[in-house]
Amino acid sequence: MNAAPHPLTLHEDRLFPSDPTQRAIARRLYAQVASLPIVSPHGHTDPSWWADDAPFANATELLLVPDHYLFRMLYSQGIGLDALGIPRADGSRAEVDPRAAWRLFARNFHLFRGTPSSMWLNHVFHEVFGLRLRLDDGSADLYYDTIADALQTAAFRPRALFERFNIEVIATTESPLDPLAHHQAIRDSGWGGRVITAYRPDPVVDPEHEQFPSALQRFGELTGENVHDWDGYLRAHRQRRAFFAAMGATSTDHGHPSCTTADLPPAQARALFAKIVAGQFTPAEAELFRGQVLTEMAAMSLDDGLVMQIHPGCFRNHNRGLFERYGRDKGADIPLVTEYVHALKPLLDRFGNEPTFRLILFTLDESTYARELAPLAGHWPCLFLGPAWWFHDAPEGMWRFREQTLGTAGFYNTIGFNDDTRAFLSIPARHDVARRIDCAVLAKLVSEHRIDEDEASEVATDLAYRLPKEAYRL
Image (cartoon, rainbow, N blue to C red; front, side, top):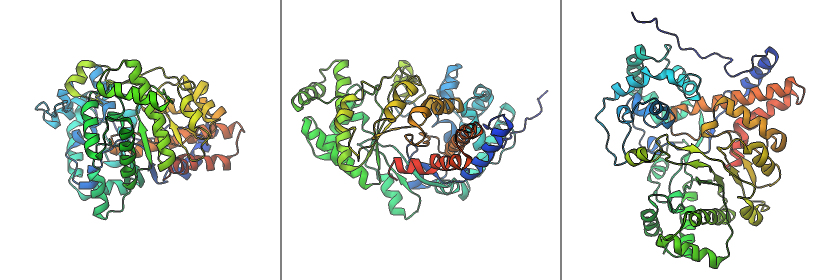
């Protein structure tokens, strides 16, 4: 006997405090920010969506395949990536019916109870597709068919959704080797949506990246520089950064294992680079090189004005077998202990007091919020704190971020929110969660008479809209 279907509802007070006084304040604050335009200054969506404006294929390709939050949980419960239709490292896939993959996902959707993934997806199901039954084994086909039918209509094309979601600007992230053809196509199309890029040089910065030798070769071919010479290598970065800026970039992004920086004398930097390009380096020398390049990137930011972001502290591809079969970004990345005070000092000694330099720091190590990051941002004028990120962008993580950084950094040494996602349809959900949590935090401060409600209203608007625009020079 089949169980009765369960309704899918979104409570209007979700994520607000249970205390009636605070909840009422949170409601009033949220009403002022709920419909503000979305500023998405850092993420990993695919610019080809808006360049081509082609219909999305189906629910599996749209919602499951791009989202490593989802298949890492499923994999942890013994569900193989082949069964979900996830592409392999060589570009091939198992022959899996996307409907069968969706049914498998739906059958296991209970695994996500209480996680941010279920919150984001239920928002998408309810608000974007108008579904009113909970996703499970019994409703899997209803979901698949409803989404498939919607995706064939003009209202669900990528550009139409961009406009429906009230996105003012979205930044994608590209390698220096990317010709940015999709961004050029968006420009040439005459469409008014603002989609910009960001400079992410990891493949030509990390000597331990599996693509480093071939990426470096391509880097030289693109720029016409001798990138096996230190000075030529730096000129190549400057050239590509200028190209990215001409295509709308306002920021760079650096995904390093640590936040180590270095400021070597030129002769030592050249000698280190010679070891790197010869492939004759130790892990410590690879780390030193990455640190030196961060300082060089800061120097370039003084010249071209690009805001610098560092996303450190992740052991990438922890599951070697999975990496060899499926490649990067398949849910096997694990947070690391990360140190900032000593690691950043070489860069800050050189550029920390420069009035035009801007550095946004992120962490996957929450123990650093109160001890290191908030005091650093509360002193250095160039430093700003990015929001709770990746493993910590759940409501609880957002609360911890505010609680541990507010006393030393305040609100205004943070940059509001960015969604940092590949999952396009989750963007409104993620921003809504951030706005609700910030309103809940502010409501607590108002109820404790630490700030007045008019001040809280101004902060809520700043966090949702003004601060990300200012932080990223948008």
